[in-house]
Image (tube, rainbow, N blue to C red; front, side):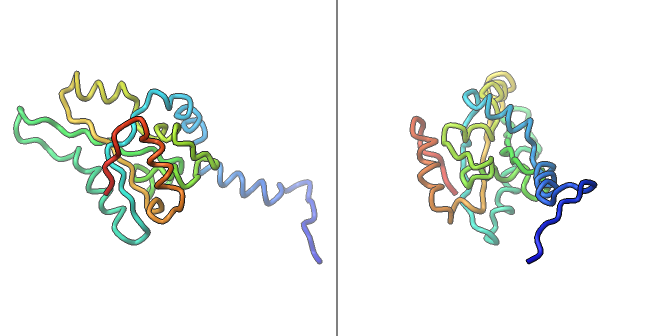
Length: 166
């Protein structure tokens, strides 16, 4: 059978594929977020979805809450923070972290789930200094059908209250 014949002037097809994959990721930000995971918050709400059932629409609506103008100066502003996504893709960015389905090079340790969310000092700043209502969420169209996602989510919140799930 015909196999791959090395050409010294052209990179191996596997290297081209790896390079394309790497260009879609944010490796330095992923590394920084893993290092700072202990100082980050867990999401206030997790949207468990499935493909083609409105997860993107619901997450878009939740994210738009912080852009709703306040008509009264006394009303508290809502500051909604969206999850970090390892993929630089416009449809996925600011909607879902994909953490518990293994999109971070197979790492699904519940301890590091926080890496996809803002720093605790951000929550403190918004609530105590700015007087805003801080809110962050994660919505993933694969958590509902992924076999280990419920266990991993429960493990991430073991020391906290149970997460509100939509």
